[in-house]
Length: 267
Image 1 (tube, helix red, strand yellow):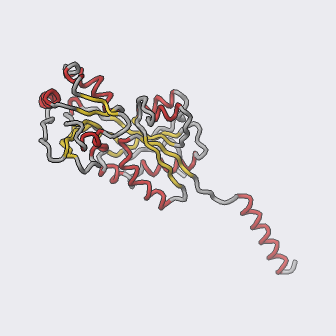
Image 2 (tube, rainbow, N blue to C red):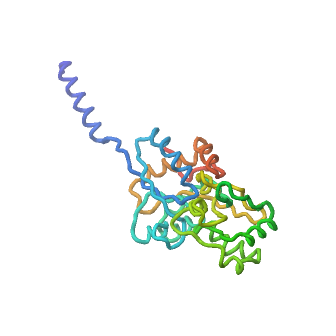
Image 3 (cartoon, rainbow, N blue to C red):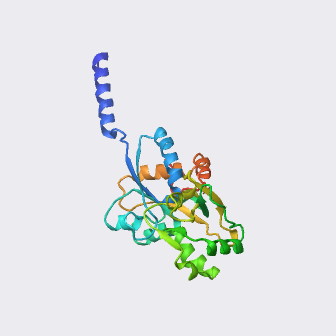
């Protein structure tokens, strides 16, 4: 065969090979995250997109509750996502309902509950259980989340301290916005929520975590939905969020990172 003909055959074969494997297409990864992980997520996504051809489409919602923008409500009305990021126990609940793939949960960070007041306001003492109880009883208005942390406060901590009845007129559950926003504009004297949800507000003074004896530490986890069309891309993003490279940002935003072993083999 003449050299020119041989080259022509080689080029045709190479073209067929490229056509057969097809182009590597970027994926749109649809993610909904609850508030506790949102500050870290916002900062990490540009770094992820810089190293990946994938694009992340972000939505936000409370991990539980019946508010119109909560994750359960949005899933219930048929909205679809590739990844859910929320409190681990709530994610397990979605797995039991068949909405999240069994075995896809990856813990990303541990979150704790803290308190804040409006910037410049007196900083009450919550350093001990007794001090926390006195501060709660003395506060004229208290705001707490309608999500995981607020559920713990209202159904477990307040009754445990024996003050649930006294707080029934002063403590208010906040729906569809951050507790920090309510305190920042002066609609509540004292606010409780996940630390990572309070820190972003410049108009607040963060006064600390609630005492260890009554603290609730919750893992925030990512899981892949059963209706995803982008399984490999979803795994790739979760692998990035669970990596050592993401840990400093997660720590800076008020959570304790978990560098997790993935339940699948990384690409």
